[in-house]
Image 1 (spheres, rainbow, N blue to C red):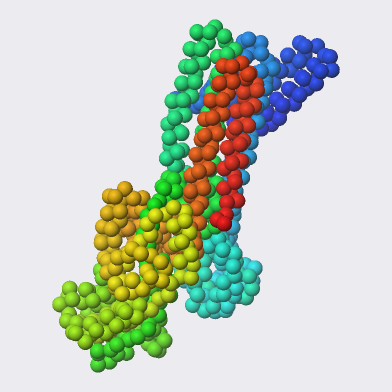
Image 2: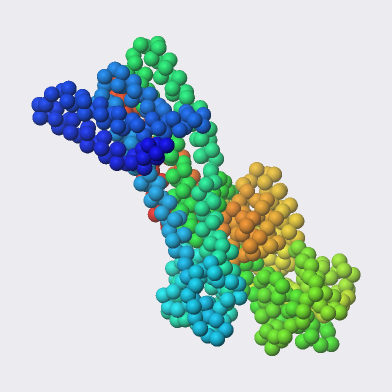
Length: 620
């Protein structure tokens, strides 16, 4: 057992020793030395070199796998038998050297992913109640702790700024190295670096629950998730390697040419084929992680590359989600009391419209809010809550009418006027009476129109907007961004129905959203894409997470996955083409065992270098 471990650990050193022995043998021969000494050196090189290969073949056979190592081992032993010590030595050296190159280059493709883990903060400066500051391990920080972060320091938790202001670099989270100003009330994320200024942050998420820790976990899981191409190659290699063994045996028996048979074993090794797809996928996922696009595995890469229909939620996806109350029409005796009740209920939600109501209440000086005893979310309609003795309903008109609350003609006219102005309307009812009509305005993200144009250019044929908002607001947004197909007044279940219709037509559908009400659509779509600013449920349900929450990242994800899929196909073609050409060259008498192994190892290096181009991939 100890010897086996030593062979694995010392494999690179063995390759170096074998190479030196071969070099010494040929130099000795060229200097006119005895051939028997040269042959002896080559024999020692062969025995030394085949040892780790034989051990790997044996380990594979123990789990009933016929590996490439077995083919090479049999070929080398065969070369011993026929006295081709130069062939056996060179084949073992090239195989070991090729393995070394694979390790080195694969390690490099994973460095961008591993560097994420190394960027994680290790310590935190916790501020006690008496003002003293103590350095503690980041794992010892608790939710609610106050953490001091000075210039040059890393934010160790997800939290909210309670004192100070600073410019912060969030590249480790968003992939964007621009400085962002953070002041009291702003959210900050673990892994961000304070460029200048000082912040005191109250911890909202700590340890493995921080955004940065979740990014690392997602990317690490993605590395182990195989694409359809990888799964096919795994199945193919399972049958291909034994087939090469049988072919060599049959050729040997028919032709009685033992050297030809063992040469087939060497040339038939599917090394480049086995490694070609995984290295492309790892490089592509690593590139995405560096640029704020988290892709959850190889299967997602291939599916995303074939998407022809993209369906967008409106609020927070096409629009900024930075909503603000534009108008309030009051029908209650005491507007402030109703607004307090509404803000207390909406404070329980992170929907952009809810945040706008809470913010407006704070602007009106209504800070002390009543306690919400019970709240029920009605997906796509709004919320119903018990606040003291009052039953509060907040949401769409349908929520109220379903409860038997009357909306008169004059009130409906107010709602329609608000919607024509491009506002989203939120109705507040207390018990069985409409109390407030709130018009909330949102603005389109600046990059949306250009991003949609690039997606069309990249081959996405259908761009659709689905929204629970009203028809007039939806039409105004669609016109502004250049989307021709949109559907409004939809419940979450109705959005799912639209996705099913597109899929029934044979379309490959990606859904892009950010809210909890988007999670059914994110789960059903062929590819679910969640904005990183969205809810935990949306992010968990999705296949791709966009850390900057911009449509430019959707473009990046589309271009990157297409490039990765192309790269995978290129590597498969290179691998299969190399084996085919080598076997043809063998039949025609142009290829020998050693030269064939050299070409084989070069093909492995070529597919790895081809895949590594993805590490530097950028959307132009």
